[in-house]
Length: 346
Image (cartoon, rainbow, N blue to C red):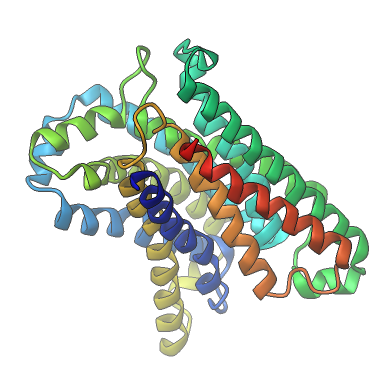
């Protein structure tokens, strides 16, 4: 039962994550860099503090008592993840919600799940849990590959005008390169949360400290998010300010009519909060995973993110006119993604 509840909790987070770009599409008259940094304030600064404040007893003592090396490492990997985060937004801009998230999150799933145990020298073939993790990741990657193939079929079937209507800035080659890079860098978030056993401490020590101070294991990851997301915000903030300067878009913040500004702030904060909720529920779900399978939680999150992002892609008409072959291929890929999440039941 704990395995099923874990999947359901992570699925709730994935639904929130896949939905975050929908409010963002409601933003008007702002450049990408302007709305990206504002939603970052909501998702990477405000939301982590609010949720941690209400779920972590003695929050400030937890943060001050955690090893400084763990704090620094967590923030560094958060900054690396931040690079992936800003290019992740660009991948959806050039490929659409469905294909952009699918490819980025595919690489994120594999690298984020397997990097730490491989670097630490763990032999995943030597235990049942390790074999299940490898099997689950393999099925997940197969599903992602099928979804990506469905996207390639769709691209061939659509006319240039249809592509422009579905995805305004569609650019396949540029989008693919950005999506792959975004996926690998985004996986640094997972390393920031767990560290690398026997090699480097990071969020795992903050998590342990939270439990010592009486935090429910369901919420012990919440203070970690404060640090790792701060690192990500700093990276994004610097880049967005650079774009504001080079593109002369600083006027975005104060030149809009009051109604448009309120609209933009509302949807930025709504989208940012939805994005954060994926990790709030992920931390709860991961705490319920069977012993030895916790690392696989990251792959489950990515697989379900892809599933829900493609559902949104269908709702937003990104697959309209793409043909029966591409849609049937997409359905097969989504089935494999769902199947990969249930490996923990074996």
